[in-house]
Length: 190
Image 1 (cartoon, rainbow, N blue to C red):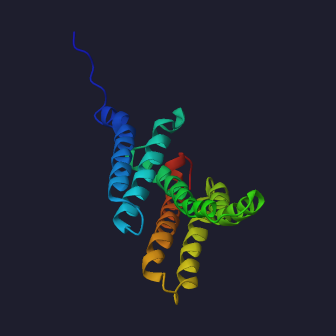
Image 2: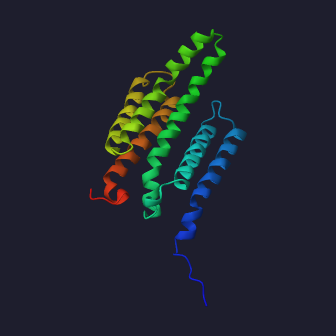
């Protein structure tokens, strides 16, 4: 008596989240070896590693009713959310410099809160666009354009411009793609 084989993509799909988690850990290790201080390849490796970890985690703990999605649909559904959280984590790292400024406790807390305002805005946009993806698409693309416009004439443009606005632009595009295919991703008519 032969044992039935699982459907062709089932085994691959079952191990895909672990592949993302492993790739994320490898990229984070590479970024720590290369360094992220004024080093764009290290920063990109860190961003991709964090995104891969978040995406693998989302795919690992996804609800049971979403398991009917194809692999491409699963990636399209979770990718904008993972990149958004990655953007929030990355922008939050810039708030850590307040601890080296020698302020008192309340001054440090106030400065930390002020440095985390962009992160709070990104997380609010994520909350608004979790089920209404068009909101995230429009607002993240607008945020990327606004950031590029605001630093256009500064000396930081070519180093900070793509590293901050690039992930925001990618997140907005992914949310718009998610919105355009929402019927297929949710199993409801568009």
